[in-house]
Structure formats: structure tokens, C-alpha cells
Length: 213
Image (tube, rainbow, N blue to C red; front, side, top):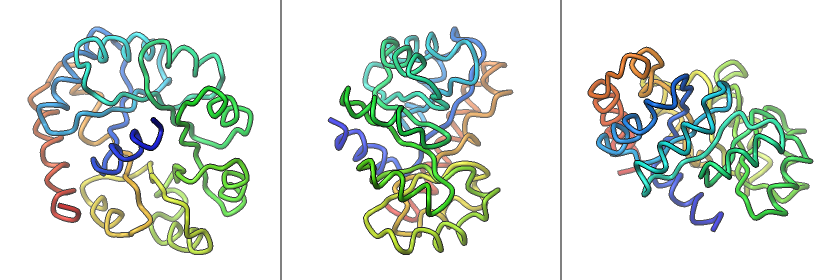
């Protein structure tokens, strides 16, 4: 199951990272992403609405691949999975969290920023890791340097990625997908500007197609 989820994320090439304050807008947000050609989402646990938003998006758009981000505790992980999330993403690498997810057959993509982080992940059997915060840690130049010794690892860089640099990341063969929020701006979510989100999403998908088809 986890391999299938990773395959879908890789095929999309882009993981929308969503911070949502009002779960009542999640269903329409999901529909806008689907209409734009990107039927997946990472809803972050940065707001109290996260779990309800996951449930609302899942109920309204059952074919979407929906994960939870900024998952810091086992309690949050349980809440996310109970709400209908199918994978989890964390900003850092917490061995206890990774092991709990592995014991429950849940895909966890932990965050890394250094070779030591990568090796800690490898020691736990993790082969897909989030490079975070990507641009703040030197961006693609740093990622190419620190990933060189670890040929089996694939990365989902997140943080500071947008239309200006997204395709540069995608051209690097160690990139599984990129996390980004430019197609789901918080002001568009809060105002219900679904057409804008659909348009931005379609433009992002077109950028991916220009590199990976």
C-alpha cells in the first residue's frame, strides 16, 4: 500500500501543502485541486481545523490522495488517520514516530536537512525523505551535495519552492516530488476563490509536464 501511495505522489510530481483555518472550505478546495489536475493534498496540522478538513475533503472527494503534514506526535498521527489521511509528513525525523507508523503500516515521510538526518532515516529503513526547509538550507545546490552519497534515497523538497524554481528541482533525478503551497494561497482559501486555485493548480501541472511529461 505504501509503495502505491509513493508511486502516486511521484507521478503527480507536486504535493500541495495546505494550511486551512476553516474545515468548511475543504470540500471545495479539494474539488478545485481535482479540477486543476492535481488530485492530492497534504493538509498540515498547523491549525485546529486540520483533522476536520481532512475528513471533509475525503468525504467530498473520495478519489483524492490526502495526507497530513506537520505531524509531530502519535496523537496527531492517530487523529489524521482516523480522519481519512492515507500518509503522514513531518518537518523532522522523530525515530519514535517513524517506528510507530511502520508498526501500523502507515507511510511516513520524515523531514531531513543534513547527512546525519539522512543516515538516521536509512537506519530506520526510510528511503523517501522530505528535504526541509529546502531553500533556507541552500536549495538544490545543497540537496545535490548532501544526497550524493545516498543513491537509494529520494527526496520531496519543501519550503521556498514556487513557479520560479520548481522545474529546476524536478530536473534533478533524485527528486520524487516537490512540496509547495503557491497553488493554494491562504488568502484564496479564506476568500473561497476556487477558480484562482484551479488556475494556479493547472499552471503548476503544466510546469511539471514541461519537465516530466
